[in-house]
Image (cartoon, rainbow over all chains, first blue to last red):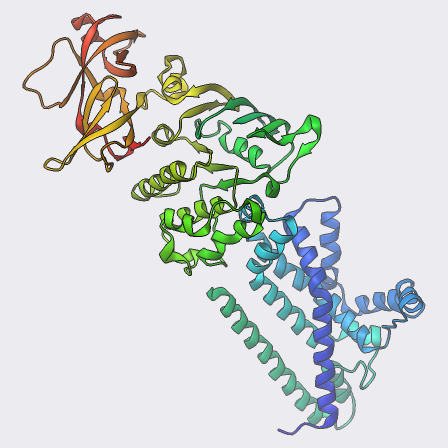
Length: 227
Length: 362
């Protein structure tokens, strides 16, 4: 039980890699979107808000299917990415990261937006009158004060990514070593005769990973709220 | 020199303020809802579209006709709010240096160490705002605004969220920096005591308009502005010089053109200038110099005007040397004593009517 096979290790490393890149991909975008939603009024704000929340309410399979249509080799975005940058995401681990990023995006935006909304706007005004440009005020005041929300957002999105199943399997399929993350591997073992023991081992690993992520986030939040 | 002409529509409220003022401290006085904060925001360049112009010390910060509208960070106006608004994630020193670091090095005239000494912040450098008292926080906020090297300090009710004791503490520091750093200040308040203690020129705001601009004594003494300046707060303000301190009774003698006043609660040295405010209701009148009296201040004066609206109380304007003083007495006393213009009388002012709030550094 204590020693992991190479296959298991590979599955865990892949899952963490997918989760890490999905968070890294969505975090900068989520910060910008959350800031815009929290601080500005602009035409189409309600629509943007609704679109961002779609992955939360749609069946994940639908999101995966939409991604396949858009980012598939012959899809409008997929063909363009392939032609100009030589990037292919369909049926690759990068595609799994993209699917996870989109599924976790609403959770991340919500957490960060709430955090930014709770900051007194006058702190930003005062920083402006003290000579800070818009961008500098955002970097030196808004972002540091929104840190607890950022941490929560990152954790939620990371956890969502570790557990992502429906959109991933629809978009990038279940390819061992490429797109077979922890939940997909568990599913495979559950489906194969005599795979129960393996499925249980992987499930326990999933539990350990989740608890580790929770503890880390709790520790980070405490550390930032201390100062 | 501040030259302001601002027209702005804020929901159902119309702001249309126009005035020019030249003074170390300009007091913006008005009741709540008179447009004080909207005006200060217009000066600072925050919040909404407006027309008109803002010129400070010859520099145009805003002029819609010429298409000039400097963003807040380029106006160099230190804004001190009612709440201290310290950055909670930075310790005191980082708060103080936030604007200092953004200022052009060649424009850094006000040194951090000087401000820290002046405002007594030495022991607080590494503390976080959450651990400071209200007065300490407001002092840090003032220091932070000063270190951004402002051409003008905007203070919007800086004492309003403090308790009485802390108010006095912060007020003393504001007087100190006014005299020491010589930065012009626009001081907003609905407290006439604060305005009269600090300001030289007053801009009286009512319903989004500047209805009077002038020397504090002059505007506050005008009987026609009483609906705005307030009946209860009626009084007079003038500058005096400290002559002597009597440690036995803890009383200070102040000299002014109309004579000498003996007051308690002054912590100033001989030769220092002190501004006093005497409320009209604390002044009594007598036809002859009274004897056997507990009132220590008895000064001769001349009646210059009497405001008698037929009510039970009348207001008498007096001249003591070159200083004008107001007294509130009953109409019965006025009739029984036969008080009239140009009549010589004795004014009686109780020393105990001078509280801490009515005496400050001039």
